[in-house]
Image (cartoon, rainbow, N blue to C red; front, side, top):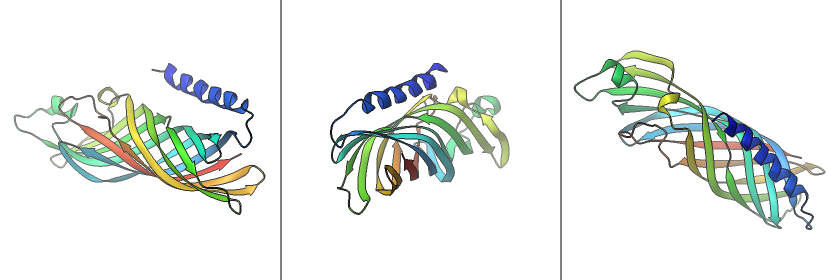
Length: 224
């Protein structure tokens, strides 16, 4: 698993090198930096959502323009997805404390991923140094940290508990969003937008539970 982040980094820059060799008019690869606050929440099938959690995403982003108004867009980011929920018979706590009847746990998830989205952007024609875009695609995320606070019957039983052994390594999600790009000087431009990342895979390994996480991102970036 430790090799996967390295493979992702090399894959990202391989796309960059290949794209820069493409010499079609108006095409090419644009690389930039992104820093994005996130608003995350947990949605368990056997329980309920109890509130949102603030997180952050940062890293590299890139657009490969394969047609005048279309781009293949990707990124390589560290993304935090936080959120709160109430769930029943949660591992590993249930195995430690035990009970003959279902027990509810108040949980706060603190999850961190290496994220590699694969999306398509549909852009308007540039007008007065600005253009608008819509974005749609797949989110691929690989867990690198999983911690949790847990409360049982009003008593805290977990504080920054490491739950990596109970959290799935891979998370997939559906991305939909939009925003604008604004030229500031030469080839440099600012990106601003909003993205909804709808997770559709179970984030826990316990087969008796089905828990998903989602987040809303306020996208900010700088293309060079």
